[in-house]
Image (cartoon, rainbow, N blue to C red; front, top):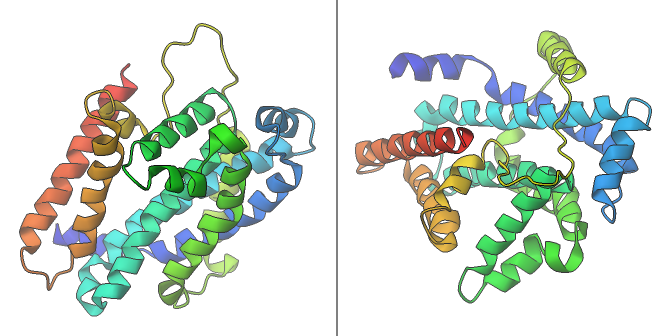
Length: 278
């Protein structure tokens, strides 16, 4: 375990994640200029087939965003050994960037407007509406697909969640400086990866009986088969966030919290495997 933490600590995951973020934002601007939230499916089809280099920029935006999230997770693991150097508030803000990053990725999936994106959005909306008292207000704030289509999702994806992530992460991010010459191989790798592997797009197909959501959503989608939406979609993820927020080396009950987190991830991986096998 100590060797793993040391390895994650020595690799510049923070710089890698920021580099992927910069590429994602720049390529996202190109895609956003061609995207119309009123006709999402038609917009993505047009970008892929008619806009010059549109399919490439969409792939670049998609995969750089995925790399950004994965590098963020590795970065959190890497700085875990220094968690005692952060105040409780600083650590909580840092952990809070992870669900916000997931929301940015998730809304990007929804904006595709294809069978996977639209279905995932409707599932998320149903989960929020199942929340007592504040469900309708939360849905109006975050999704509201049934009433407003992709408009609310679009604004949150490019503005709302981005600003929230920046506010949460700024105290930590400002310590890092990224230069392309230091990470030229990683930059080339992301550009080439996006060149040869197209971003997913699944137009509606008649007769489809099962749709798998984004890779990070499949375990939750599977859990929804067995538990009510409130428990599966709200309470279950919140238990992980609370545990992560409490996981500092100077916290009492540290080992119990750590074992809970490891068990949570193993259980989620199992659910994901079951979901993928369907």
